[in-house]
Length: 293
Image (tube, rainbow, N blue to C red; front, side, top):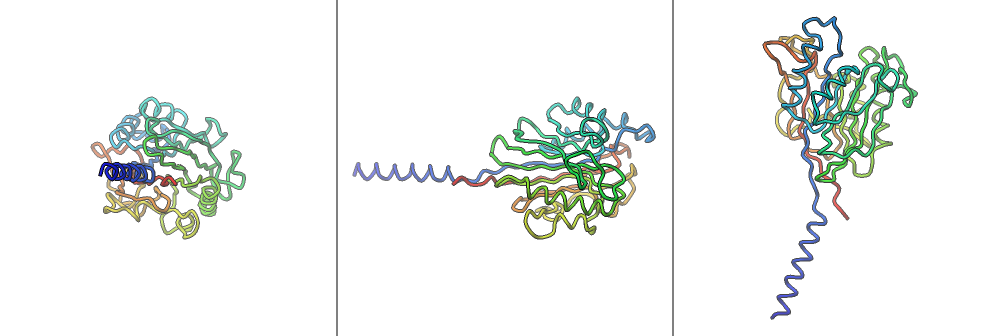
């Protein structure tokens, strides 16, 4: 009888060990993308000095774990780092790969993620050097980071980008380039998050290049959210709270297998004063780590 008890508890211990070893870890994350509008005195009452604190307050309140911003100048980036000390920012200026021109920075909580790699590539036929591609009016970039969730071990390839506002061909080639780049740089069992102002609605070919079926297909969080999408469909407001945007140009994409718990376009305002000429987009997601062998 004693021997049977020993065998029984030994079997339970083995079973418990196997269950723990093969359990799939889960990371619940909040993502955001936000074009904050560059710093120009020409905006008058909507110029950056009047919007700096509302932008920072909004990000502190919604507290994303990972976010991307667009149209960020070097001076704005320095102030964002000061105003949002809980985050680490990565990225370079698009004009020279240093501090010149606008940034499309990625920001993440270093207490939540470890950084395994970072960089920038240009949306052009010469992505490794500062350059302007195809019919684009301006140089355009994508900022990337390999992140590891400290609690779950979930690995994420995050990319933040801002596509050209004028060049239709440039946007199409940007979509193709980013998808191919992800296919070539995504690590084994690494989830993908793509954030950005694409200057493209869902019916444009450049957007379709990202979501077309096939390897490394991306999914729009607005389309697969498990709860009804919150807020207006459109994301560009031109500093006018009464404007009815016709469609989203700011997007959050994820790789297949990612759950999207909720998605929203946030129309935050203070007595009709908006923090930017774009609304921020937020998505709460759940990502599974690869089960251990």
